[in-house]
Image 1 (cartoon, rainbow, N blue to C red):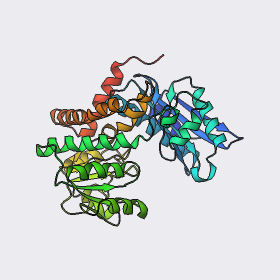
Image 2 (cartoon, helix red, strand yellow):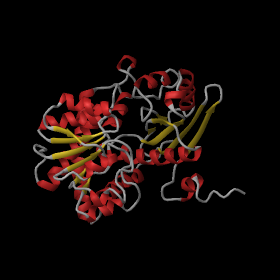
Image 3 (cartoon, rainbow, N blue to C red):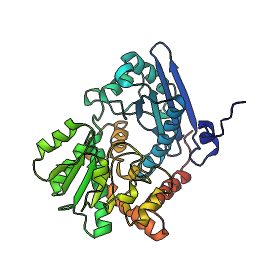
Image 4 (tube, helix red, strand yellow):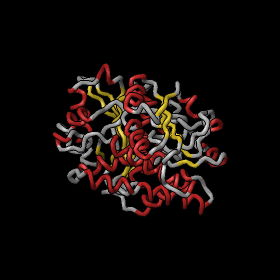
Length: 362
C-alpha cells in the first residue's frame, strides 16, 4: 500500500490544516482540463472563492494549494461578515499555453455540477473575461464583466480594504489613522498594488515601490513623478530605512525566517494571500514589535465585491461594507491585546467562533 502519511490525504483527513468537507478532482480529456475544487466549509453558506490557473510542478502540489487556499477563504469570508463558507479551485497548467474557451466551459460544467455548494470567481491566472465564459455553463459564477451582469475588476475594493487596514493599524499604533507623511513600501504594483498606491498618495503618504515587471513600476513612476520612488527588489524594500508600513501585494510567503528579522517597518499590512510562510511567524513579528494586520482580513474587499454580484451588484453598498474592514481590524488588535496573543491568532479565534456557532448548509 502506498504511504500517504505525508501527502495530501494526511492533510485532508488528519492534520489541523484539514477538515475540508469536499474535494473534487476534475478532468476533461477533450479540452485538457485538469482541476481541483476544494470546499473547506459551508457552515456560513455556499463556499465562495476564486479559480487559480497555474502551472503547478505536480498534481499533489495543486491539491495542497487548493486545500490551503480554500481554508483561508473560510476565515476570510467569516471575518468579512459574509454569508459564505470557504472554497477554492485550481486549474493545472500554464494559462498562457493551454487556456481555451473549450477548457473554461468544461470547468464551468464541473462547478455547476456541485449545485451551488461552490461559487467561483477570479484569482491568479483568471480574469473577468474568463468568468464570462465560465458563466455560460455555470450560474454560480462571480467576477463577471458589467456587460454580463457582474461587478468587473475586484482589485478596486481589494486595495480599498487594505488601505482601511493600514488606517486601523496607524490608529492602533500611533493614535491617528492618518497616513499623511508615513513612509509605505509596496511590493507588487499589479492589479491591486497600483490602486493601493493611488489611495496612499491621495492621503499624502510617501511610497516606495518594487515589482518584478519594469513596466508596472514605470507606470506608477510616470503617474507620480513626486512622492513615489522605486527600489530594485523586495529584499531592498524591506530593508529601507524609515519605513513605517510594509505592504506585500504579490506572492504568498512574504513573511518568513529570512525576511522578518530584517524588516524595518513597524506595520505589515498588504494584499497578498498567505503572507505567513509557516506557523510561528506571527509570533516572530510580535516579538520584534511589528504589528501585523492579518492578510485575509484586510484583503477581503474583493470577495465582498464578488459576493454582492449574487444579489445584484451595487458598488456603493460594497464600498460601505469594505469600509468596515477598518473597524474589524481594530477589533482584532484589541482582542489580541486582551488575550495576549498575536493579531493573526486573534483573527483565527474570531473566525473559528463564527463558523462554530453557525449551522452547516444542507
